[in-house]
Length: 258
Image (cartoon, rainbow, N blue to C red; front, side, top):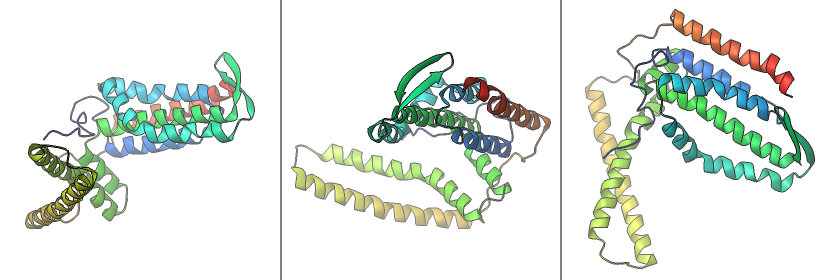
């Protein structure tokens, strides 16, 4: 079975890929906080903030088709939330986007701001996971002092969710090979329940085998990587560039565009 790993482009080699995972995580965390804190009348400044993560993705060589596909996978939940805003708030308001301005409602303004913040923060998040190996990211989070149990759970979730998906694919393939006709809704429902029960039992059995194998290899809950985490000059330059970009937009460009 082949699965779409979220960090399948993290094994490339570029200046962004070689940055320390802790530095990238902290920059993305601060960037996300700044974008979320922007006021609701910040459509123009949101477009400016999108330049940063977009440039990083292009510099790192991440295909834009992959980026937009990942955004579309999560977007239905946010779209439903955003489209509910115009239904309960129809207060007239003047909207401006750069040199353009028009009349709209406060609900539609909130709708586009929510979608804009979602897209910009998703660009930053995809840039993080697409340029950082998940093992390096976990090691960086461990060095930053995050709870050890949380890091272990994240590592297991990422590593073995694909084992669970693979088991489910085998069950579905076996079901498709034995299904000759439509058995009716009730029979199909009982069959689906039986398949879920079988998947649950197989998952427990697989988890026990994995646990025994890990204990036999001396796993103690710590994530180790071949490369040592070390902040270098390029990391400091990246932090400085990101700080100048975010602060410049927030304190200088934002008052002009509003």
